[in-house]
Length: 502
Image (cartoon, rainbow, N blue to C red; front, side, top):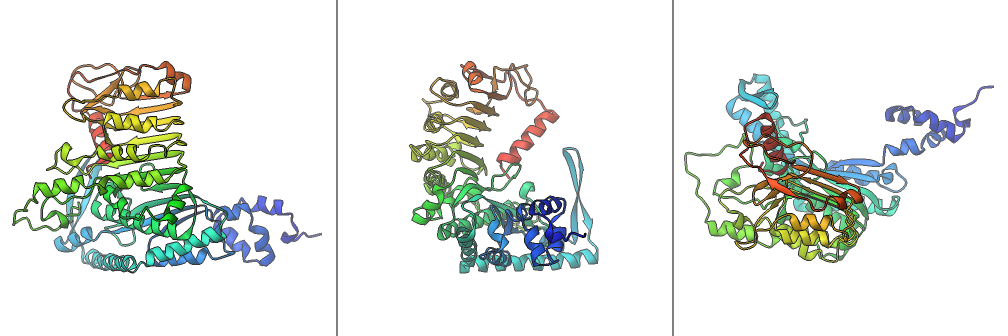
């Protein structure tokens, strides 16, 4: 006797469905309503638990439609929002010069030449440029009318009403269109970095009001800081543009258990021409007229503006249930400002001040790329009494003043003291007053130096007993200068890609 597919037990149907890919499952569901019901179990639903949405009008409207009651879009648990950086500079350069760059790579070395474009290539470049410029105009209109916040807020509201509880994760990233209107590029190259940073800013300032308006709860929030996501940060002052005093937003932030964020210096224009420079090789700047430097007093005032420092502090302080905090800083290296002018250390100083009694649940802390004063780093760690996992990567400890040089000793001693609960330590590329730290421990060094130096630049300790037994953690500095070598080249290039300048 023949057995119809719909007569099979749900468990047997599911064991068949797990062997199929999504298109095949969708085709099978078309066989009939009962078949569709049988097929729509955990495996099929798993394809809808993660969703990536471009922050464009059409994608946001589709997101709203997909999250209507009883539709599968309500199953989404992990949402990634993609800010779009439409960079016309590369195509403008191709049409201006009638040539395109050709890059030949040989390991870490590369050579760039210009190749004459055919008529067909120029025609395509013209079409692509028109498309990118149209997208820029559409994005500007979307932002100016507030439709971006409206549509995203509606989708979030649908998820809050029809979903299965808080979102597991909400992530923000950026992609760029530059050489081809159909080809997405990750911002790893740094080309046209101002477009990337502006797209990150727009995405943040769209998402936070939408989140506040919806009442949607989120457990993990990642803002431009996934692994190996390079040269994309939000300028620190732009964090202060969002109204963090909004009770609805404060309510949304209270549910966050994990916050990951990449931020940078404020974008400062040193000359009258810098506002037109995007960091793209295709920038067309008239250098026949010498750039006019802006008054140094104006640059110092902008660098010292409190909005540069309070945005991060206020954001973190509102996440009162944080268990994990991962912060990354990208240095834009404003050349005319001294370290005293740029005041990069104040970012973590304000965080240490504002977050007192707000990090009681914090178990994991990761800090990368920051300039910091000893007392602020120590305070931040001490104010996290339940901290178990600490990573310090590419941290620059600087002198507070002529009489207060500072050192890592107090931080290391606290981490290994009986009063601490830290079980895992990762210290990598730490700098004490500009000098790279060499730990008195076994391990490899990052590159050769002129005079042999004992120790390693990376210290990793796992297990509470091992942490305590490592007390005291000792370190020293290189006895000679860095030697030119492939290791040194890779180290410098890796640091620049991760921590700036672009």
